[in-house]
Length: 315
Length: 290
Image 1 (tube, each protein chain N blue to C red):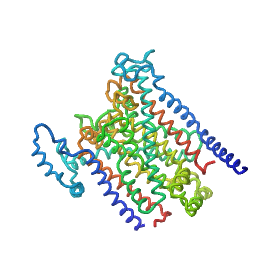
Image 2 (cartoon, rainbow over the protein chains, first blue to last red):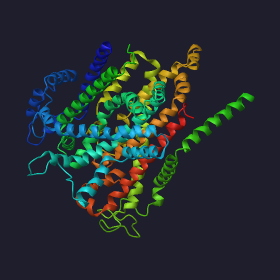
Image 3 (cartoon, one colour):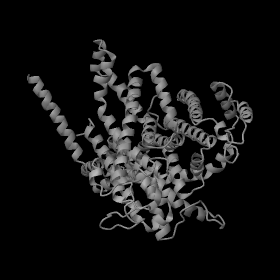
Image 4 (cartoon, chains in turn purple, cyan):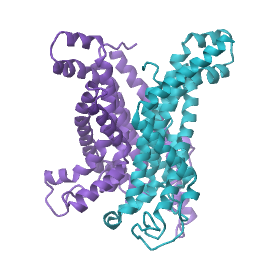
């Protein structure tokens, strides 16, 4: 067990290095920062001085190691637009994004667990078909289109929910105000995720319901509630742990688009404006940080899985 | 002679069972009909479209009338014609991007699963790395680096979305490789190319096909999202996503629903149909099913 965890961490290290290489490679594809400097007023000598100052006269692999050294010290570079350190920018914007992602994840599970169990227990009933059809609808609606419809309904027609930002300008930022701003983005993000999760939980539950130990539990006559929720659910949720790890990159991607529609002041909004402005240090910083988060999440879910499932033998 | 006959009838029986199991899913059957109609309309869009999709033919933003069934857009182009051409582009992007990612994924998965060892480790770690980056983020960054357009979008979506297929194929190859008939091939000294492409690949086609349908659905959603953000298919060329782009402005959202509702509904119907078909295929090909 302990050995497995160590092995899993050791595997993550080359992946981590690889991520930095891909990130650096993407950045060099994007062109070098000198091209952005060049203009009529900048002399060739000044560009040359800057080139040496930035270390661009060195071979590529030395540039990579120089960049990596900075990275280890927590220096992600400086934005080309507003000259703020990228690390500081990410730190200020990551909070709202994590709030949005975390809430959506929880809401999607609150929908998906009961719906998935119901669907599996009543397999092939009209209720099961309804749940599965709705889950497909959840995954098939483009998030931004659902967002438009929600804005149309709740902001324009009914006028009860705000459609942009995280707090109302000028008002004291109470918790209720933030919650009101969160309702629509969370619905959009959670519904697409819940769609996937319902089907995962349903199929994993169906598999468990077929197992002998569940038949034993049923035969003992402890009542179907206990059978399903105590013996079934615990085992059915195990594979769902891995699904969490897989869904974090999806969730992050969804957040980028949804934050754009709702002007939610998070990492996605910042990244999109960096992409439009071709602010490469910021884009690469976000890529790197999000990849690290995903890697860490996968590592964590793998280890959790190993801890939670005593039947699996790791060599 | 007799053997051949039973083999053929056996194949027919398998096909019949697969078809029967597929059509047990009514929604998938409906979806298949819808996809067929949509593909037909998309392919023959030049015949069906009442107007040139890129020409100004009417008033600015006029509501639906008899001559313009879905109204006109902000610059006076016919929305129905643009919808047909947009569907054509969106379906094409979905299928082409999936073809690119499936080819890459299948090749890497086959190599990784069959040869194992060092090559397997390199390919799988590379897959892990690509999978660590949030998919949409990579696509957006690539769209920012390369000039957006039809071919760029297809290549970007294709080159980013292969890890899933690669893992799937690798897993299948690992289990097929241990089967007696492959072991027999190896002992008989069959060439590796033959074993890989004529023995292993055909036996893993069904799961690849099922997976590919879901990739088509995802690619179409991603194209829509990218074009909606202005990083995908560039106007004046219509795609279902960039037709929705205008709805970001509040006045269009409030007063001109004919501009944004139809493309949105078409995307949902197409994607959900593809997902239903994929789900039914999974069921139909499932060897453990009844």
